[in-house]
Image (tube, rainbow, N blue to C red; front, top):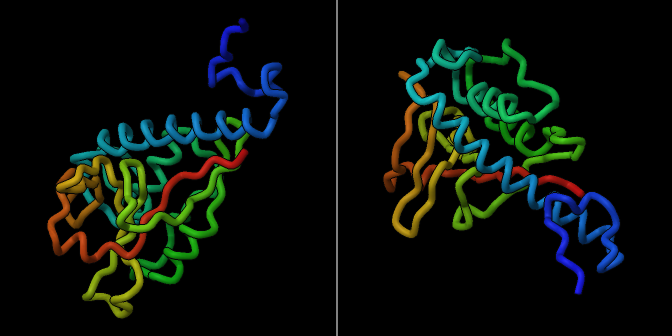
Length: 187
């Protein structure tokens, strides 16, 4: 009887199944798990970084949009970066457009952000939050990375008004979640 082929080596047609598509999907799923683990680990390494609007440097200064962008870059996501000179007032429509349309590559695979129902949020998702004080209170104005989800609570890492912090979401924060997005690796 033939030994099973390890998942990580399935980059070609499997002699056992003859199915190239299934093997590629398994490799894509493996990359998604890898990216999720690296995203959470890298996000936690930014905790304590001071807030700086349009900042992009770990331990020096960062804002919520560049925090997401820099974490992605540091884990190996290649693609168009967020410009440093975006408008200082949050633009919910632009933020949604970026979440829906940004494309990356990782190990020569196309990666995008895929919408996830808020109830199905998981570690490694990007959460977009509404801010009732903004001109468009029903549009997102803040981003964070979900680093842990249990049956009772959700923990995020976010670039808040003072610094990047790791904290539990209370009910008020949970009610402000506009949408969640996961890294999707395409076969």
